[in-house]
Length: 176
Image (tube, rainbow, N blue to C red):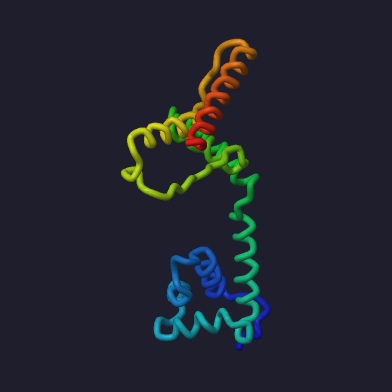
């Protein structure tokens, strides 16, 4: 059991390897690379991470993890700043595609884009040719509405006429 008031260079190396290689090296590998005996590396790694045996090492591991998390944490501000930097560098190198992608990513992060996905049920081969055309027109109108030219009064009158014709067709089909 350790009664030291500071970490040894070997313990510091273990702590640094463990924290900075998290997910890439096991604690046992960190112990071996820190100079602990291969035969006892697994036990040493376990003991070094146990506050009952080495409280100073555990404190240092926790302190360094916290520092690393603070340094590399992602926030909207850091994310936006990094994307702006990527865009700037891409433009300097005339990599316009990369610059556009970085700007789109910034826009998405800022909430400027909203993606909607529609899941349709049924199969297109179950529809008639007319039904397929109508569906495609409907989708096209949703994506790119038609531009209507003319005076407002003319357009309103045309719409009223169309609406009346549809009502007459509906009424005549119900009577039949």
